[in-house]
Length: 83
Image (cartoon, rainbow, N blue to C red):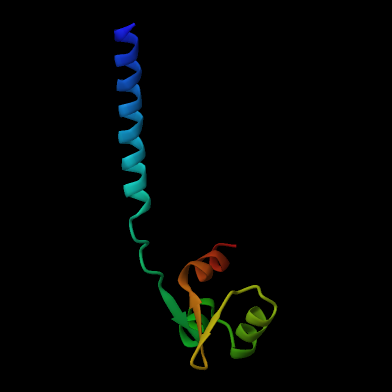
């Protein structure tokens, strides 16, 4: 009976250690996302101002406007290039 209890306690302790490791890994900061402006995106995609505007307007290319300037996540541009 005592060996069964000790065995279960060992299992619970091992699970606790795994949970602590998992929680620590989840607490790691995400790498910063790279952003491109209109000129960078137009050069990469070889498109005009109006084409970039249409992509943004039709929500084919997510964008964020900060202080009147548009920025695009580099990952979103990579997805467009791949497709």
